[in-house]
Image (cartoon, rainbow, N blue to C red; front, side, top):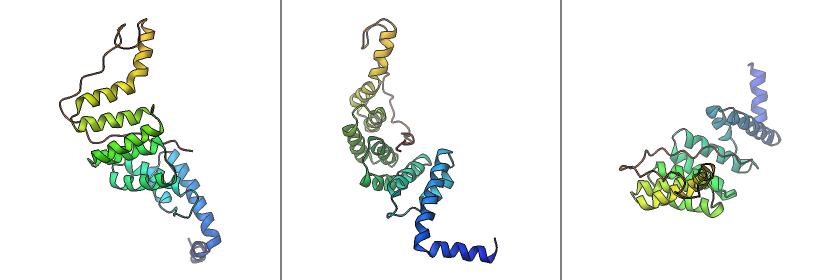
Amino acid sequence: MCVADLALLLLAFLSPASQGQLYDDAFVTAEQYYREGKAAEAEALYARIGPGHPDYPQAQLRLGTIFYSTGRPVLAEHCLREALRFHESAETYCLLAGAQFNQEKFDEAYTSARKALQLDDKYAKAHTALAMVYTARKDWPHAARGSSLRCYPARRILASQQGGKPGRQGGCPAPPSMPPAAPSLFFRAGAPTIN
């Protein structure tokens, strides 16, 4: 790159009209990297999207997801809370619960998982997050019930395929017993698919 190219690049950054285009290009490119699984490249571009940009909430959601999946729950929590200021979804609250869980903020993780279930009471990942919080608290009855709620449709389908009735009859397996120790603190809810 020659000096003239650097000067043009500097002018582009200083020009208000072109800054919007640069941010738009950054967001589009970041989305492409995100879909391709290039988290580091996407992260660098999403971080450039400021609060005044129309794609800022989505950029915060993506950053939160990247931070969460790369084991940086404090940064994930910050970005996910910011994304929730603009749009509430069960998926984002569930990711927030996972980030809080990884920091051992079990009360906050419980609250986030409950908010996810208020938005979508059938969101399986939120039931799983709730069961994880109960398990970390060694509240085995609630943990087992949370797991059963999540698995009930699968158990009903299995029972009907085996010629039995829903529930534990007809060969439908009972929920597994709870382990004696708390689970690993790296709970992953998965990447969101908000478009």
